[in-house]
Image 1 (cartoon, rainbow, N blue to C red):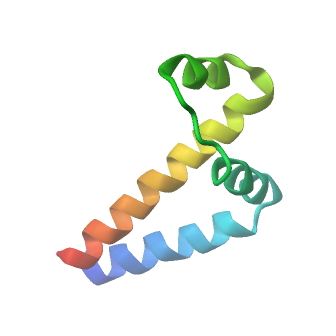
Image 2 (image 1 turned 90 degrees about the horizontal axis):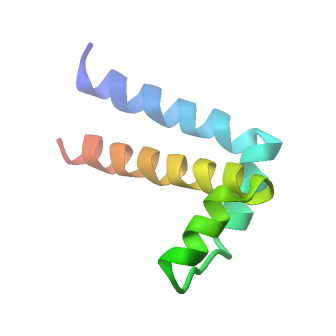
Image 3 (image 1 turned 180 degrees about the vertical axis):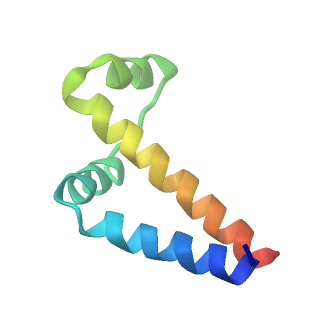
Length: 73
């Protein structure tokens, strides 16, 4: 599979994810999450009400990194 195709495919997946309601909620939550300690991060991960938002936010950051890397190559 050529690199331009991979990059375009990843970009399309990101756009699809952005439209999902849960993804939008998680993105909004993640942009206001400013932990001051590792303990606060652990509490967030272990709390059922916020752990999904944290995981989705991490996933978005990972996709952003993959996209930036594919643009450099």
